[in-house]
Length: 90
Image 1 (spheres, rainbow, N blue to C red):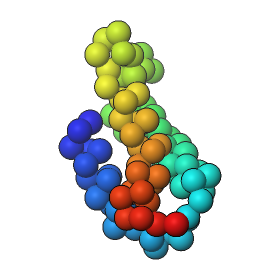
Image 2: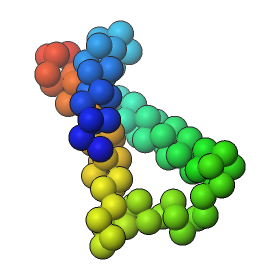
Image 3: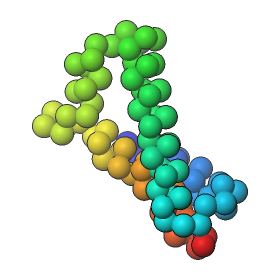
């Protein structure tokens, strides 16, 4: 989760000016889109390519079983906003 977050932060930093979003709502909308696409990819790839069960996929999101993906998804949601603040966009 930590390595992936750093990689995605680097991507967000590189492209935050290019996307042209300056308002907080626009940056969060970008984060929501990024989150939705990531979840869709993860579920579809996990189910139809890897053949993982729904229970197996859900286990990664279960905090009681030390699943860290909810934290990763929260970071993913907020990264466009964080990158904009770091690059002083807007």
